[in-house]
Image 1: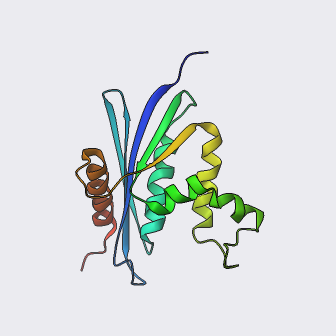
Image 2: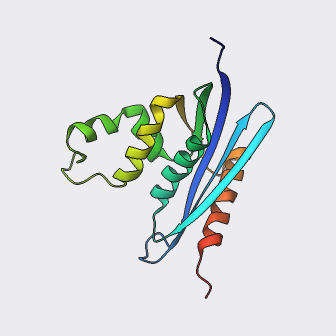
Length: 155
């Protein structure tokens, strides 16, 4: 059995008008293996920043076709990293997808989709500080903003 290659994923989400009913969101991710880079992005209407953060991670992991990589996901989303490190999802599943306040877990559909991808890979989630000069994190942010622009309705 060969040793796994390292794959880094930098992902970010953005949402313009997050507090309004009609808004635009975008996600961006960069997959880096050695010197190779692959950029992906997209967007949705009527979404939230949290949904876009999760979508960026999911869409990046969906690009990885085999389990030959040891994956490090870099994100500025405390929501995503804390869920993975503190294993909030275990309690959510045990409690029928209700949170500690006995309310339905937000973004359940995306959490389930993400959790279904994790057994396929060895993934480590790493929290980075947003807008702090990390070039690939900054680029993921730019891609997310492009995703917003791509779905924004013309005025």
